[in-house]
Image (cartoon, rainbow, N blue to C red; front, top):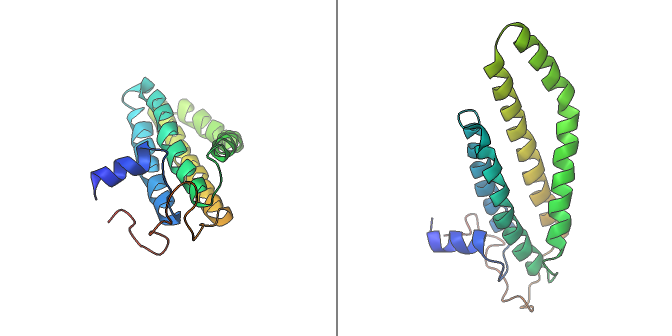
Length: 163
């Protein structure tokens, strides 16, 4: 994997990306997020670093909207929808987590409660992040001609757009 292209994918707003690049960027951001969530088992406050992942997430969605000829401001709607979906799914899973917490605390297993909640957070993050990427890829159609954001992307049919 070319690190210069990876940095361009995750850290810049300029240009356009196709659907495959959006999914690949989402996968990378999800893996980093999952690692940070798992590290919260050992270092409780490290999870706050996951907020830094909003920047690369904004970058990939902005470029995907640029590919469809739309302004990057639409990314705010996607990120807002992801936050709401995350809260709704967490609220829906709360009764299951509370039941698990009650039985684990009765048995004196406090660590299994935190692992269960971290695992639930990772599952929710996967559903929200990949669901949002799928929806955006279905809604935003690539502009086959050059637009004000750059030339057409070459990764629409590529299996691995970073090669």
